[in-house]
Image (tube, rainbow, N blue to C red; front, top):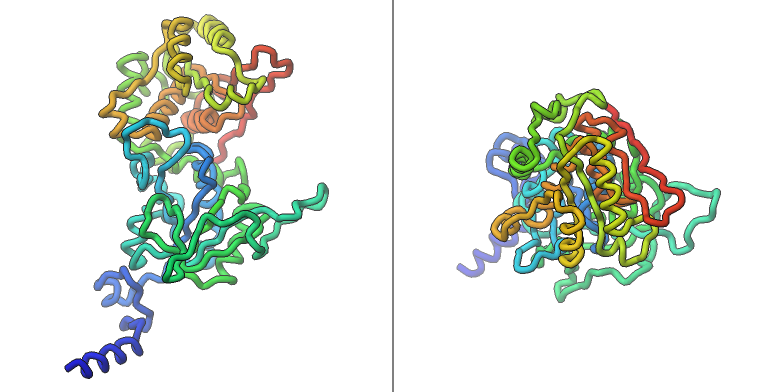
Length: 429
């Protein structure tokens, strides 16, 4: 009987992987219906991650770059983008709250994302691909020799790793790493690529230099935008619709505390972003001032373009008087001591302050989105210099059709001589 079992095992191995009736290979994770219909999916999976210290809002920008790469790949082969789970971000410091392995659906509307490019959550990838294995991990890095001014060229080359990779081989020679908090995930191969250029420079590598079915690009922030500010950029940015449950919380807060609703504010929001094309300046915004006041590590560096609390409050009062607004909504990461001081200086300040239960439900990322959503609907917005949090609010207001003059504004440092205001990146349809 044992001999028969061994013979069967040998025969099974000789015929693996099995083929469907159409002659296509079977892959782990396929459904029986796929096999029987001969529609076995041969799509490939693109995964990515970002340098651990980078925050939520820069990571959203990296998504736009990778989406552009995926669109390039889709011209040749069937690919799907695997959304990297959220977690372990520096700015998410609320204690006693589980903030790893967070799916994108907690923060964004997946059907909206899928109207731009095909995306799936990481756990769906595990189910489809047959397990927590990534065939090829490429760590993206710069060139050790740098580049000389005037000789910029887009290029990518396999090179020795400049820094020690944050991956280690186990006894089975699989690679272990952070992998978004999924300790069971393994990489089969890890190598370093020096890159210099826009995201789609990776397309030839993925299409011609590897046959791996699943490929991860680590340190993806090293890739630049293909078309920053163009239609493709804005299509992807518009598709990044916030999760409905977070928008509802923000809308209820606006209505209750800021006398603001889309109907009264003249904001023509539609659930389907592909149908939402608005004229800039057509939306009025709610009867309040929106403020993003960045503190913490922005002031620890003694930056001259960030104001003191007193300087910020002087500017806020000036804007409220100019625009005849009696309410101000403030999004800030100020520490408790600074926040108490801010309340004394600005008693009319309104903030979204979640209960512990709400914080556990929405998490720090969800609270940040609610803050951004409320700021995006204000009659006038002022943000913090070179803050990606403020940049994302600029984009959201551009999408909603608010006047750019009420959007692209920032605080000036108390002693700042040349206070250049943010650049207006006009939406493209």
